[in-house]
Image: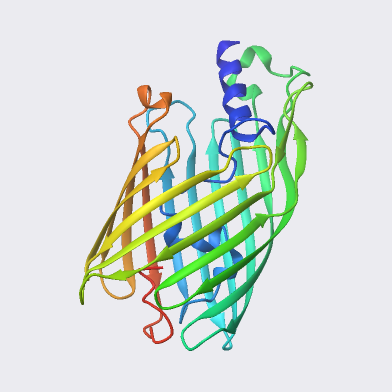
Length: 302
């Protein structure tokens, strides 16, 4: 019973309406895969871009989240873009898989600036098997399991970018959908809003500095934010991030060439979970198939 209660509390912290847990899959290197939260980012670079990410959260903590993400996007014609994202996330007995397709339309604002409008559509697939974690309660009518629960959704976004900076606002999941986990409790996929911004400063011809910020708001929950500061050289990048009341994050990147970059981040947890966890680890692989960078900065900066 104690084990089952722990699992239920963990799931409540992730999904229930009036708690302060994480619902959208969380990545520390969000700045290198913006299409996951803003469909307007699709096609804003000169060519086809592919990104893969793997995250192991709260290593050592039983039933902690494990996430994988894959995305690709590309411009089509001169002022449109298409994208696709797939995310798979495990938290104990709960698995959620997301598939989203993105479309953007861009207009020139000035010589080197553009405004992109984005739309996305897709779905979540939820699987939950609480009874498998506690044989004593198998078949308990008080506990509901989910088997390939299909939840369609849609999103919108705006993304303004120049050679030096970007600003984005988005609502990647517009529809709120409720479902039951127990006979007395109901969970929901909640509507969330994101604001992102970043600026690249030139310290000299080869060294760049980029501060960036991410705000996230969800109804009935306090606003959360990530603030990051990254330093870039021709072949490497290092950074430090702070996630409000949650973690201090170290970031490191290697630029193998103009197209390929490999990233790693480590989260030092600030909450009480740090007593049972050795932190969170994340790996990122990104490839830019284009070679032209005449309209905006190389993909390695944003």
